[in-house]
Image 1 (tube, rainbow, N blue to C red):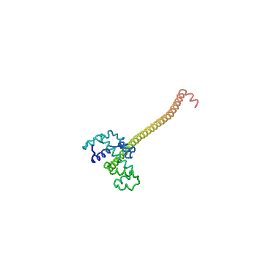
Image 2: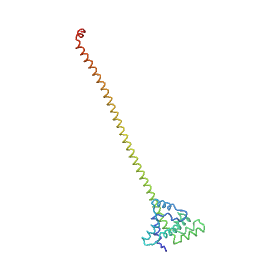
Image 3: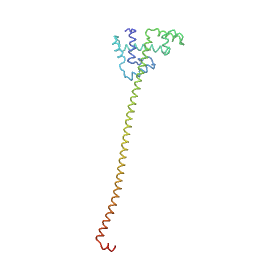
Image 4: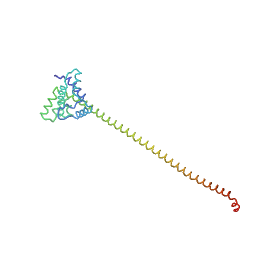
Amino acid sequence: MKWTDGMVRLLIQVVYRVGDDGGGAGKKSSSAAAAAASASALLQKKGKWKSVSRAMMEKGFFVSPQQCEDKFNDLNKRYKRVNDLLGKGTACRVVENQSLLETMDLSPKAKEEARKLLNSKHLFFREMKAAELEEQRVAYQCRAFQLERQRFKWLRFSTNKQREMERMKLENERLRLENDRMALLLRQRELELIQGGNGGGGVSSSAEQQLMLQNTNANPNNSATTV
C-alpha cells in the first residue's frame, strides 16, 4: 500500500502516544527510547501494534498491525542513522540548513550517505524528533508517578509507625498508673497494719488493769494490810 504524508505523520503520533520501544530497529536505542520502553513495561501495554492499527482505522486509514510496524521501523531506522552520522545535537541544525553538511569533518562517503538521507522524502526527521520529545514527556510522567507511589508508601509506613509508637506510649502510661495504684494500696495496707498493732497494745493494758481491780475486790484484807 502507499503511505501518504498525512498517514505517516498520524502513524508517528499514534505510535508515541501508545508507547514505542524503537520497534527493534538497530542495535542501539536512544535514551528516550529506553525510557519509553521502561514506561511501556510499567504500564504493561500489550498488543501495541494492534492498538496502533485500530487508531489508524478510526481515522479512516485501514492498515494492518504488521504494516504499521514495518513502516515505523523504517522511519526509525532512517532517523537514527542521521543522528549517528551527524551527531544528535548537530543533526537538527543540518536538517534545517543542509549547507552546514559541507563544513562538517566527515568522510566523503559519510557526507554522501547523509545527503541522500536528508533529501529522502521518507525521512520525516522533524516529526520523529517532535514525537521523541513527547516520548520523553511520557517517560518523565511515569517517573513522577513512581516517585509519588514511593512517597505514598513511605507516608503509609510512617503513619503506621507513628500509630504503633502512640499505642506503646499509651500502654506504658497505663502500666505506670497501675504501678502507682499498687504502691498506694501497699502503703495503705502498711498503715492499717501499724494502726492495728497500736490498738491491740492499748486493749491489753486495759485488760490488765481490770484484772488487778478484780483481785483487789476479792481480797480486801490484803488491801487493808497494805494500807
